Figure 1 (cartoon, rainbow, N blue to C red):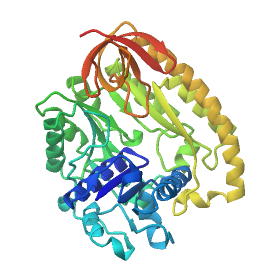
Figure 2 (figure 1 turned 45 degrees about the vertical axis):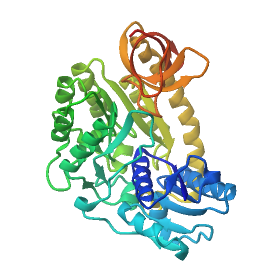
Figure 3 (figure 1 turned 120 degrees about the vertical axis):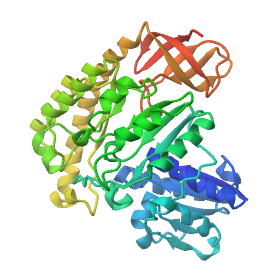
Figure 4 (figure 1 turned 90 degrees about the vertical axis):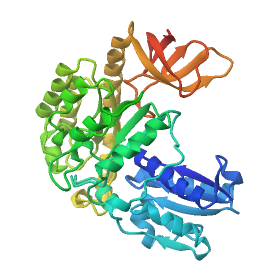
Amino acid sequence: MKIYIESLGCAKNQVDSEILLTQALHKGYVRTEDPAEADLIVVNTCGFIESAKAESIDTFFSLHDANPDAKIIMAGCLAQRYGSEMDLEEADAIFGNHDLGKFSDLLSSLDEKEVLIPDYPDPDREADERDVLLGYPRSAYLKISEGCDHRCSYCAIPVIRGPLRSRPMERIIADAEDLIARGVYEICVIAQDLGAYGTDSGPSRFVELMDRLSSLEGDFVLRMLYIHPDTFPEGLIGLVKERRNILPYFDIPFQHADGAVLRSMRRTGNRGSYVALVRRIREALPDAVIRTTLMLGYPGEDRAAFEELLRFVEEARFDWMGSFLYSREEDTPAYGMRGEKEHEKAHKAAARWQKELEAAQEKVTEERLERFVGHEYTALIEDRIEGEELAIGRIYSQAPDVDGLTVIMGRDMNPGDVVRVGITKVRGLDLEGVRID
């Protein structure tokens, strides 16, 4: 029996998919990368915002139509959020994401059209075994917690994934040791908020965790993804400065810079405090790369608030920025702040502002990229260009899937290789370089 799994949305979903796939392999399934030849298709959905939900539904029906004879399971965030009320005749099963260890049981009862939305497991028995990694060669995600306690007014993550539940530190360390033993070079440490690790039982233990992870033996680097700016951990900058294997890459989703908008979002910062954090990082770590995510169209945002956000982007000079439009999500505090018609009108205005914001940021990013020209870096190769002495890779400033890439000229480079590259040119939002080892 062959299984095909489609993972949508965030890095956490990829980790979940790896865990689900591992359980299927233990039940005798064989993985296929071609849905047309699968006996079982699993769609691990995203349900964070409206566009992600639409993509999940479209993908589910597309895969079902492509192979109607295969059994098909809707899993993940969308299933967790709506599974108990979802009338989806095409699905052979619907499976939530709170207790992935129950997936093995579900596979034994696929003839029963089951809707299984399990409760949270005890952290000490949460399924985390991953025999298969779905990312790029020698790059993997390491999840340190689940859920979130911030309760931002626009965010559905606590509705979907629940309150913060930090994984036991020893299990994280064992997970990292396993990845290193399997040859993983880039370990991307992920959570809804890395800095909140441990705060479900006391003060933050994230710096302690990174201290232990960076002290492990082996040839690897650690990349941190997603740190809430309002609870940025004290001591983290100093640790990154001290440890060469912690990349000076900070993914900090500021979301906005206008004080009134941020307060309505239930966030405590403002443009001044956020710029100060960026400067503090760069003063201690001149090579630091800072990525952020910003939201447009939130209730109460007017042109003046947008201008404040635009000034923030121009002042902070982020290396990378992603933006998205506010999605009106039921069961969140912001849902009732305006009606659907008013939301649609605001959405159109925000879409225009988004283009203006992204144009300003693109110029900043291109200018920031120039500092890499003329210097040497370590690159992880992701892809080889057949028939050419070229490969596609990433240096420390480029996180998987979200940032630009580096086009590298040279021989004998294959996915997973780690090489030294001299950067020669900026090409749009990408870099060009030559292999030098």
